[in-house]
Image (tube, rainbow, N blue to C red; front, side, top):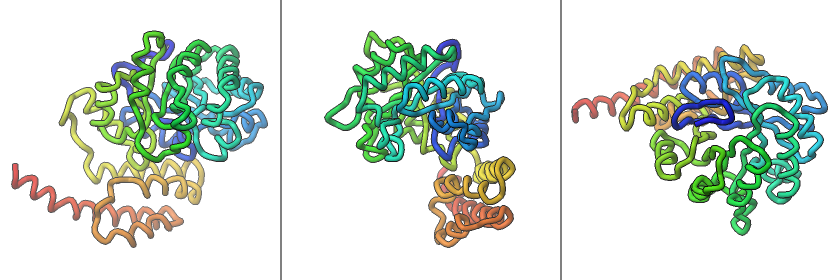
Length: 341
């Protein structure tokens, strides 16, 4: 599968761009475990044009993580064009336009998924950004604003006509936010459209290796994009690659020790990249979501301590205690499995 001249190989799996999640440290971990493509946190065009330092820092990318995309959002055509030119100077492999973010502070102001209520403006921005830069430009969007306005079939053709190099479709409407189930059949219909020549990337509820494999086999997409399932679980890309490349049961699952070591490495990366306090805050989202510690009996108090720790030493000690608890909880299950075998 290719986007412009970037060859991703067979059935690639992408890391979705996510605010406060896809910083460079997390992207590098996901890349190490097999992510075919990673994206920065999404970047406000207006903030970038105003030279807001915190926004400019989101443009920091590393050659190690390539191919990497930078995603921008906004509703003003002039700002979007100027932001795209600034992003191009950061030398990503492509520029992605966010027409899919459903949160109120973005969509409520007419950007992100809010653009789905103003298709002429959405297409004007897309066309102008494509014309303004030499890099490939891609788009990420949703099925439509709500169930009465499922427009992705026609919109995909219009966006292709604007000159984009690939389209990512999240299988929900803006009204759904992140609730309910993602609908993949409309994505498949876009892919089956004989007029569509660009790659179609499916997104929404891909949480397992089996789910990734089914997205390719049932819906025919060119790539899948994984978002919230990566929280506290960057090794999910290894699980998906093993399933896609080696078949069911292929590959060796990571041990509890290996997974906890990854979480500790993520903590170290965040602290070194920012500072101790903010590095810990940036890691908490992943610690709260990781499946490594789920199912441990009487874990509630330890989890509270983990999420309240405000020094690296205290947090590391709590994680190590959680590691021991997770291994102890897994031991009876391992012994039962061995007896069955």
